[in-house]
Length: 140
Image 1 (tube, rainbow, N blue to C red):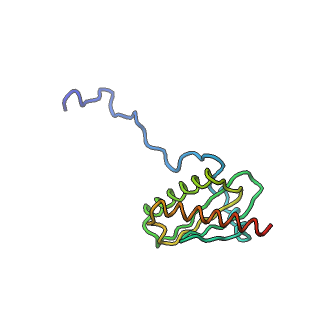
Image 2: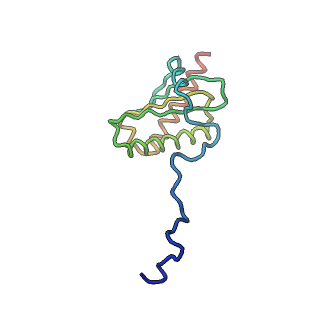
Image 3: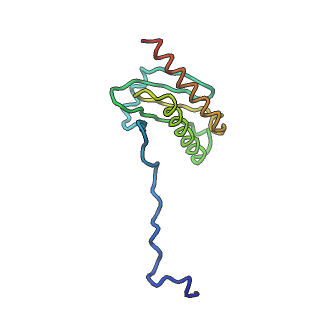
């Protein structure tokens, strides 16, 4: 091995392995921390926009907790995780534009949404959140 390619101190070890999982939470959106929280959704409000279904239940906390439901028939784990990341970005964008109410959200996805363009997902998410806000105001 040429001297330029040899490391006299042994193995590299400087870079380390990449962090696992999603990055730090930003703003006032978090994942659903407790399974019991999902039980509140039974009494929640559901709206649909395109292949997205958004169910919402208010809570006393200051955060919007968001969970995603993507069926296995939507594709491999890689495909479903990509869809989940894209949905998470859509939720952040909608939150920055209009603001999400504190509470628990369950975003369910039909298979055709898994491969949809980001612009379509973002449009459906905006429509669903706007419809949800109107529905909540009607029930007050």
